[in-house]
Image 1 (cartoon, rainbow, N blue to C red):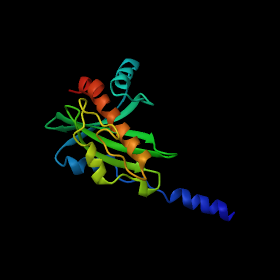
Image 2: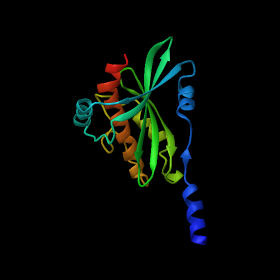
Image 3: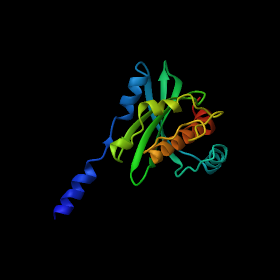
Image 4: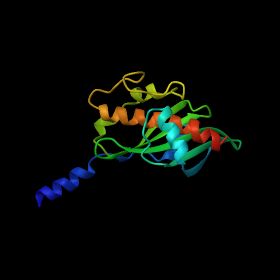
Length: 173
């Protein structure tokens, strides 16, 4: 019985929801409006992203926030959920209309908190774009002790840049 109680307490002691996506967007874009959309990407677009960005999309369904000012789209914010080790992580990747990364916010993290990449490391991903996508050990440093976290977020950002280039720019101008 003690072991069961310990496992229950231990399983809930790790992270969780850190910030709501809307709160993260309001910090970065205080005078903008946000429109939440969900979409399912077709197989051809998914295949183009995977080939061009050397990645594998595990889903075709995504949620994006259209960031608007005066009813005009100024940026996109894509929610990306993925597994790091054994548990999920969700990041919000914000990109301008040219698919250049503006910000990355860890929204939810269910692994031990010490594996959350620091803000200083996340800043390495800013400015990455379709012409210069992020790749660990190439243009993004690895994080000692949090290798899986750094790779998961880097892959998520590379996928988001691809989704922006091949889908968002075409669908939401």
